[in-house]
Length: 334
Image (cartoon, rainbow, N blue to C red; front, side):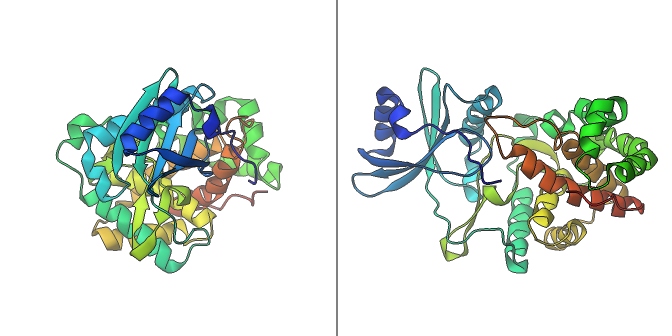
C-alpha cells in the first residue's frame, strides 16, 4: 500500500492550460504542488497564487485511464448541474481544457486531522454527514442523475456469478484466503445464495436519494473548526440510500473503525431510517460480490494500490454478509 500512482508534475501541464487556470483563480499561480492520495493517476495539485490564496486543482491528462478521463468530466458536470453539492463538498470554481487535458478548480480544504485511525467520534461524524447528505437531495436529482443500477457495483457480469462460472477467477478469489481449500468449501456451500441475492440488488427498498457511491476515508476531509468535507463526486447517482451506506461500511471496518453492523445501526439512529433485513443482506451481497470478483485480479500499473484497498474492504463485507445470513464466517484472509 506504499506505492504511489503515476501523476504528472506541474511543469507537464501545457502553458496555455496553466494560463487558463490562472485566469480562473484570478491571479498568477506562484506554485503548484502535487497532492498525493486517492487511487488513480489523475493530475492533482495544490495551487498557491501570488497573493497567497490556495486552491485545489484536479484533472485528466494524456496518461490518464479512460475511466479516469470520463470520471473527471462527469464530476465537472455534477458540480455544474448541482451546486448544492457545496453544502457537503468543496466549492467549485470552474473548469479549463486544453487538448487532452481537462481540469477542475475547487476550494482548497486542508486536513486538520486524518483517518485512519478511526475513533468512535470520527465514525459518528462521518455517518452523520452521510445521513445529512442523503436527507438533503435537491428535487431535481431523481430526473437528472443516472440510476444507481448503472454504477460499477451493479455490473453483475463481474460478481458472484463470475466466480461460480469461471474456475480461474474463482481460484484467484480463493487465493486471497489463508486456507484456499477451506475457503473453497465455504464458497461451495454459499456461493449460489450470494449470487441469487446479488441479482436482486436492483430492487432494493427503502428511501431513495442522491448517492455518492465512493465514500472512503481518502474522500473524507476532516478540516478545521470541526468541518467534514466529502470530496470526489464523479459517481453521483440516484437510488436507495442503503446502497451508499453498504458500500462505505466495509472500508470503515477494514481501517479499524466500528464493524459494519454497528456502523449500520449508527446510521439508522442518525437518519431515523430502519432498513429491512432482506434489503440489507441483498445490498451487502452485491457489495461483497463486487470486491470478491476484483480483489484477487492482476494489478493495474496506473492504479498500484487498487487491489489492496479492494481486499481491505472484501473481508469485512464477507463477514457482514455471513452475519446477515446467519451462516458460518469465511476463513481468514491473508
